[in-house]
Image (cartoon, rainbow, N blue to C red; front, side):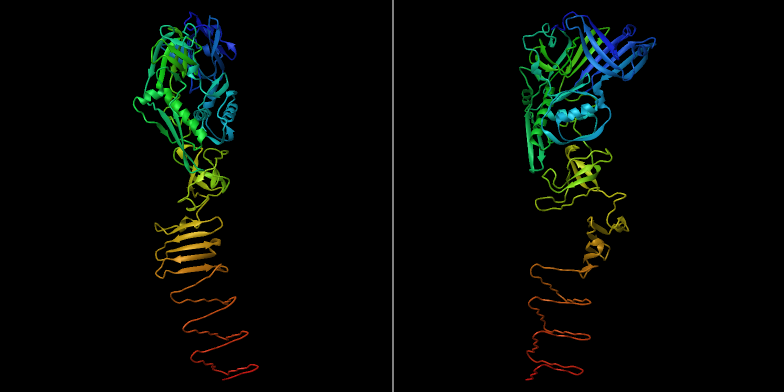
Length: 608
């Protein structure tokens, strides 16, 4: 394999729409740059000294045109492709009377940045989801691997496909890239795969050697933000217990013989990094802890360098640093590369080694423990689309939701519902119903973990009795709870008329507990009233008691006993006493009288 220190002549080659750039346009090319980064689409920029302003037309450059940028060296490897992309921007600039034309473009991965979508991926593995995203974006599925675990419900919550893929990669400890229209997704390159210690820059082009192929290089070992261990904590709803995952500081981006992230962190007795972003499922949470550990630890060793032009240095390439002494000599994985052709320096390659965090403006400010994860701020309104009373801890007492402000098709996973005083065999149990508008928050900001806070009335759904019955003269006089079938509990607080009212059939039957001086209870029913006791029943009054009705009937299956110091039985028109045997006794005296005639009859009458 030829070395980057060999004296080769390098030439940039450009083709547009499958055709090589015409010689008259190539002659105008003043500089070119191809950038290959881990967290952004690969990009190119071509600058022409375009005095006549004809470079675009003659070269066939237009928005969307396919462009291939290659480097040709007169060594054994000949022509190497640097980028295959498409034109996304055209510039023309007047610099001191000289026209300059710039053509800028991106590889096919830029399509993953365009637009945002909300979508649900149900019962799919990470690899299956990645393939679906690739197909939708018009990309070929390359080598795609990831955790085999089936994910019950994964949400793309109004973010671009790129951000969504970044989230999946962060969750599973993977990386992804688009090369020549092909999407690859899998474990990151390990720094340990770089050349062995016996190779030099003369032997191997991916050896970066002091005094051989470097133009400028700065290597840094830092303890900043380094921790010995990462801990991710989550909550298992089914088991009602915490789930804790730990991972020691470890990175694949740098492999140095004399130093590692744990050593530099322990110098200052750094505490572990604790994140509350766990899912509550042990295996996925373990992977998240390992991925987070790698992202943090990757920042302990960094490089910024410019070397002689080398098309083999790309993002994800494992290189070896040699001749810079300990602790810097070792193996590293390139995070970003930049290939430039300029009149002043010819062909040069610049590269960066850094942690896996997104350092672009797009990624600035992202929490390391969330990566590309969703971070829904505040609360959102939603509609209930399904309710579930049983089916396991993942579904019991939960609802599914739609979010009309975000999508017409998206349906959430099963969301928990906040209850007042929820506990073992106690607390309230109030479920929203299909079609109800509800207010939703998200655990740890994750759109995949919605929680229903409560219901919302709106212009169509009004409370029982309407808002007009609730407020009078600026004071709340009525509070109520109503069921779908018309059963209502009301707290009525008009001055002097305070009461609690329980009603059914839209008020046809109701019980009222009046908060008055008399402290009375009124039971009113539009239909029959039935009171049944499975055992004994006792009715006691501290004062008078009365029973009235059009017809009153008292029946006993074995014995009826009426007793009082004084008993009066009166019939306004008649009084009938009958029985198989009738006995009237007075313990002191007895009197039978009538204002009219009196008849005593029987088959035998005895008067003693």
